[in-house]
Image (tube, rainbow, N blue to C red):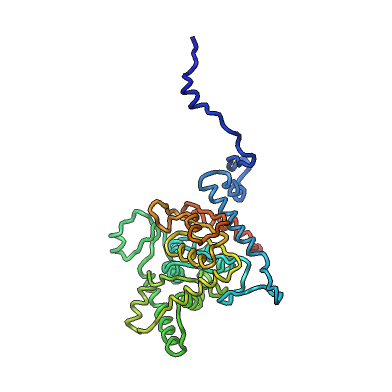
Length: 363
């Protein structure tokens, strides 16, 4: 004879739902029955859930930056002219875009995506680590190769090969870098002594971008387009090694980090609106955020990294922590994508910046 299940169980399992709000988004993905359309596929990320949805929100946030950047600057009511207080002479737009990334991304193939942004003058200020500077120039002198994560460090060291994750850099590349940079450092010392030049890390990167004279370089295009590049820990890498050796051969070179902090902070202070696009964590993430503290926060922000917040690290901190410090505005809609930037960033650029560049005519 049939009997009713225990009411305790049915009450627990068959809880009555409230109606979902009318504007609730239904989860859905891409139907490959319609063929392969990569743009349509990436658009469905927004409704796919998890980090795919974060990716979709990041696309929306970057496009908001670009739309604001394209708007005309407000005019000075007294002179009827657009306001332009940019301290470095770079033409001002309605949204200053700060781009930050760690050195591993220049070591990787993402360097080509970063170069695209600099070449097409799509960002206004860059912050990178020392490795993020030197590896760009080194790649103009000799290639980086694919390897494997599991290769033994002891064996590689014996062969004079350095490993960056699953990338391999022969140590000879750094020897070529030394041969290239030492005469430039000599000239910088000479100009400091004879012309009173006050060198800063950003001025040094600008000079190196000029000297490399190679369109494969990110910083060649930053030099050409007057995009300032800040690297407050410029000595923390091979460039630091070269500066160390050079200080014995031809001592006297001074790099003024105080002038650079004044420069980047003033870029933020005098911007009409600001957007932050930060790949990775650590120094580059905080340096850009802290500059935007000087204007009580950025209007737009996208982080892409794999850091977690449970250890209290700045790298892992979600955007809302920056809101508490006044580094992102309380009215902003910032996004963090928890992902490897080598997977995500080229796709983000495809759905945002790249859509604003006309493709070259077919040959």
